[in-house]
Length: 232
Image 1 (tube, rainbow, N blue to C red):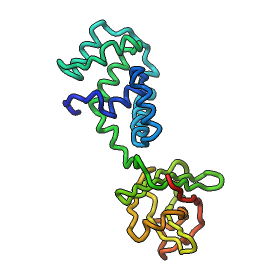
Image 2 (cartoon, rainbow, N blue to C red):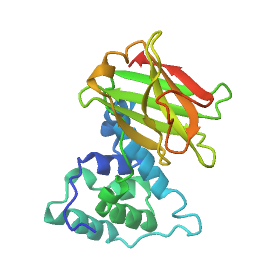
Image 3 (cartoon, rainbow, N blue to C red):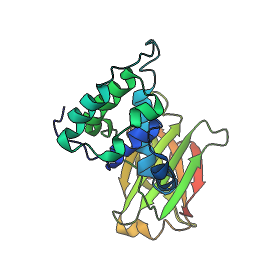
Image 4 (cartoon, rainbow, N blue to C red):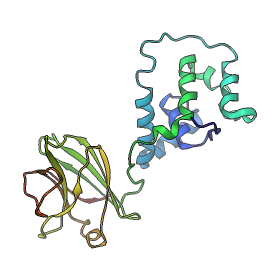
């Protein structure tokens, strides 16, 4: 657990406060505007929500001692507790348990973010690769600056002993493998210089392949999902 003092303006802290409905009104609109355009920030909020869910299911709310705010702020911020935090807990009626949860999670926020790759904030291209019945759904976003394709599997998985392989199809050209989807829901694929120009107007497809991927360099199994690549 880190002993460093968290920056109250850090995105991790702000996202935690937003998830608990603790952001002051003057900051709320600006934060929500950022959420609309920053996928990475939305992901941080989702991680907070997952961590908070169920924490207080079996615990009855209690009224905290009068000095709990002072003690928590001193623990988090030391002598220079920011003025904008003053009155937050009274204003929103936060229970003693929620105060404790927030204090603990702020110190372990780096662990919360160790959840795999995050989508690019400003992707050049995006795609939804989906089966007709949506039994398999994968979202993709291309980071042109780093030549990386971020993929997140939202539904479906490989059959036992099989692999899901991701392909790029450009025009009438033969499909080119981008790689095998890992068991994890999120992954990054490096896009070679030869394929970067083929992304625009191309199609992504996912096929069912032997474990480890196609042995021939071309799809050998059923094409399970497809989706056009579009400008973001």
